[in-house]
Amino acid sequence: LKMAASGENDVQQPLVKPTREKIDTYGFERPNDFDYETYEEFMSRYLSVLARRASRWSGLLKGKKAINRSFKVKRFIRKGIPGEHRGMVWMEVSGAQHKMETNPEVYTGLLNGQKDQQLLDTINTDIHRTFPENIYFCDASKESKRVALYNILVAFGHYNKTVGYCQGLNFIVAIFLLILKDEEQAFWLLVTLVDSILPDYYSKDMKGLKVDQEVLGELVKLKMPTVAAVIEKEGMPWSILVTKWFVCLYIDVLPVETVLRIWDCLFYEGSKILFRVALTLMKRNEAKIAAASSFPTILEAFKQCTQDTIATDCHTFMQAIFTETGSLPMAQIQKLRQDCEIRIS
Image (cartoon, rainbow, N blue to C red; front, side, top):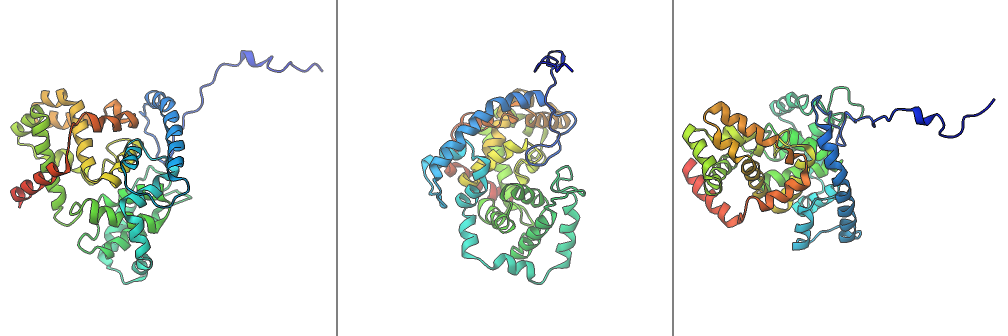
């Protein structure tokens, strides 16, 4: 029997494109209209960026467990935290790690303590609505993170009775669990986010959120008067346009990888990043918004802002939020907050 020479029959084989993954790195099912071409083109460039950043971060950390705040660390964070270091860096730079270490028994105590049945019922209702398209949170999940999600939300609701439970927190904690893998860490990161980074965003009256939406409106007047004029002419409240952006911290608004890059900066630089992202989305679509002339067309223009092709290219997008929005001093934001708080109270 004559054997075919190696590769002799391969010539006739048609080139088969590699199968495109229906599930992304974080367990999310990609929609049927997912733009693989744009994504693959971006990833072909981004992988080398990731490799370079991973090497730089390994050099910066050198087995350290603590990260001191510095201009270098800030610059590194703006360029993206590699996946293998992201959870640890978030915990360190946000102050959540310190909170966890100085309160060792708190989380377990909350889980074992007395519970408010009404709170449990509210949380239970939302657990099944949390990322049903994700393999870690769907009904059929073999590696379900739902129990951990439930535990954290219940513990937090009893830890911070002023907030209790607020819709939106379920999605934030679910993302924490995809990155941190540890329940107690995710709990303390949530505490830090709600108490320190975004105070009063998730309280019953959401005062902090309402104030910041007005602050965004004032920043738009300063930086994009044509956009502000359209919104004002229609008498459209900013809450209709950007509540989801701010409450969910861009989850389900921008691609997951872009959201994570935004959060890298959020945990180091604070709430100012939320304004930078919103202003960049609007700035890049300024002409579309300025051309809108009614409630529906304004809503459509804002929807298109989030579907901008740059949103997939998280690296270019993150560079844009620090260049396209210009100077944004914290002192200016604090002054605007004081003015807006008086206006809405």
